[in-house]
Length: 309
Ligand SMILES: Nc1ncnc2c1ncn2[C@@H]1O[C@H](COP(=O)(O)OP(=O)(O)OP(=O)(O)O)[C@@H](O)[C@H]1O
Image 1 (cartoon, protein in one colour):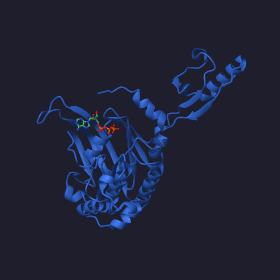
Image 2 (tube, protein in one colour):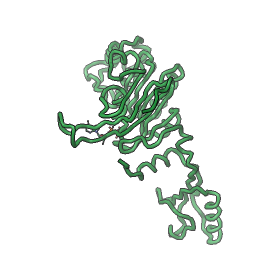
Image 3 (cartoon, protein in one colour):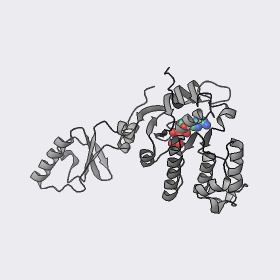
Image 4 (cartoon, rainbow, N blue to C red):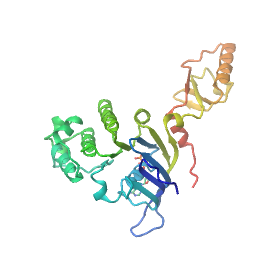
């Protein structure tokens, strides 16, 4: 087992979680998370990305103390995350499904969650901050999906907790609201708050997270900064095939939206070969582009990986 890191806010060692199929049965369940180890340091923003059903929400729920791991160990703020009395005043949580009470107003919902948290804040300033001041008196039942997400976010940031968990915080938000949410995350981060979040938006993780963990089929497959994750030296070349794909003189990886895709570790040589071939045959390579690998390429490669356990 790994040693505790001094400035760690979240630590997970070999965490596994299996959903039991039947009550009181320990067999035949679904192993949603296997052998996940991660550390989130104070002040860091860590994003969990992954394919659908990869185990991101389950991992988050274990780290939030909402689920007891089937195996392994978790420490949050140097103790047990399930100890609600200790955790509640220090940790804000935005679940994927918050289950807001439909009959309460926005103001009442946020004030109630705030009171339960034990953290101090001012309801009007919080609503103002998340852009919900004009909806203060509106009942939750009458909110749009994106507005409900902002109520959930308001509850999580109430009282500026030390640590905030956000499960797909921007899903259902329009681009302006997404940017506004990330601006608040940046402000809180600057003030010292640590974040662990999940998202399906690669560009948001790329811009807003210090480190990224990529999950696939229950395990953490890669972890690091965007630079770490994309440092495999692969370059992608794309263009519209001028004729039969099998006539192309370098190894083709596949096709994508009508473009030939070539992933290569020797881009200079392959581009030279392609240019010589195109000139010799009078081909014009339409929409020709050469780009270093990005997070989307790393993500795409996850889908092709097979489960090892
Ligand atoms: N309550 C549950 N009972 C049984 N299986 C569950 C339950 N919740 C999730 N699962 C299964 O566990 C696996 C991981 O689910 P989880 O919600 O953690 O994934 P995720 O990475 O957050 O997915 P998504 O990106 O689709 O939100 C999935 O195969 C899912 O079907």
